[in-house]
Image (cartoon, rainbow, N blue to C red; front, side):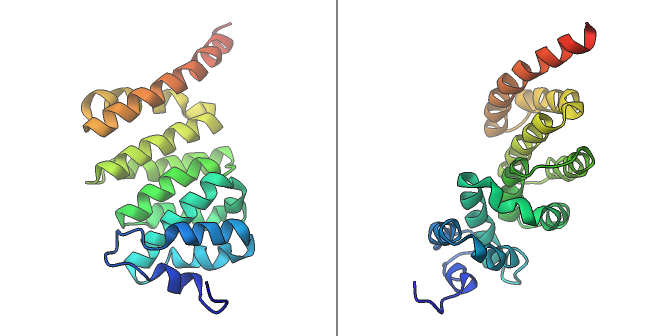
Length: 186
């Protein structure tokens, strides 16, 4: 990549707004040079929906390997979570959310946004919201009963992808829930 090539110009390459373009390259750049993350974060609000979608994908990929990249951007990402409309942006934000260290009030705020995501027309957004809710319940045990109920319902009534993901998430969360319930009843 030439030194003058910006993160935005790399992300603008793609035939369709949902194409990956060079997102893997951008994720690698940010992992190698974390100071470049601010340019990537800025692209989440880009007027070009393709750039914003690819920025979300690149950020999700990079933060999967190094969650600490998101720490400085927690407030911005929580704000965007509530206002995001494009599907690809929504599902990537839902997947990144549990990588943030959130306070209990922040988990409640994030949970409200993810509840709205469950009303999205996109099965991918709904499935990612389920994943995000499970991650929030791991951070804030007070959310666990609601998340378990939601996952139980969606693992019976959702799309095939939602049912499959719901069963996986329930197995993981129910192993957490039992010790908590035991402590509360004893």
